[in-house]
Length: 185
Image (cartoon, rainbow, N blue to C red; front, side, top):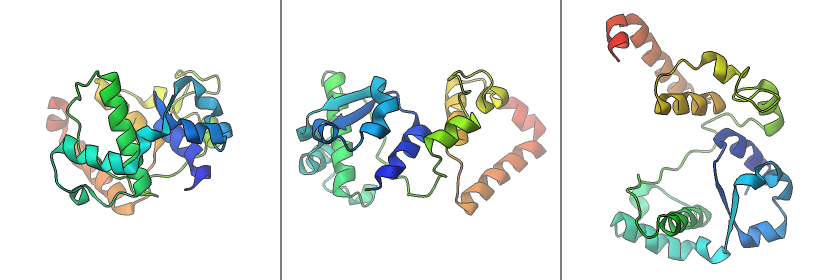
């Protein structure tokens, strides 16, 4: 695994809660990376991240005989999915909400920005840690919560795939040319 990239991914995702195996937490490998995230770290027993148990539970939860239709997940990805599913069931007291199918984000699909660069660019927080004065606060004119979250997510994870970028440009060009439709939406 690429431990160096974890800090950048955490900065991109800005998680509200971070689940970590007690075995990994005790090893101390991630101490430096997790230092800024201790307020949101939840440590769980390593057994909750067992990939074989996770595979079985995922099949049961989604009512499928095989997971291949979801993509080719590695054992560690299955373990993470299983740990997450277990935690959701634990915190929701056995009432598992309807969850979308897991989707694997391809490595390199978004630009990886390390924590120091992200902080200095003031994308979503200024140097004091406040929203005011950040790039996001200046450009966010969204009117819904989901729209605001989408804008923040896209601003924090610039795309690297030229075709996807071109598709977004085409979408913007369409709405620029369709003022009436844009206003009604």
